[in-house]
Length: 168
Image (cartoon, rainbow, N blue to C red; front, side, top):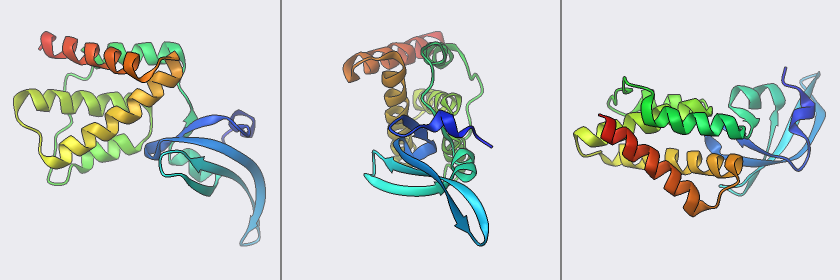
């Protein structure tokens, strides 16, 4: 079970593909006769309050914002990692599922795959939409971890993508 202390009230966390959320509270509730630890979150993008069992929230990608070192490593991975692109099947399920894991490395892998695909052919609407969503989530996390503004964050991501394209 996730350590309750790491998700303290007022802390900003990443809630899988839903994006950033603020912890509004943690408590116990009785559900079907069983005591369950629940976390109350305010999801910032959708401006929605949700109450989720803590174990289920962790399964859906609830985690702390990444560290500065991990953010820097992710930029390096965007430049030179993930040589094999994730294929786009009919509905993009493989890429969407990977992104839905909510982990930083999953975001980078999906973004790298879409960047590589965009270099070989025009992206379809679903691919473009997913790329925008992934890039936004990745930029938000980088900005929070590296304490950068939006413009500086976008510049770092653009530079990494340009290096990736140039290396191919």
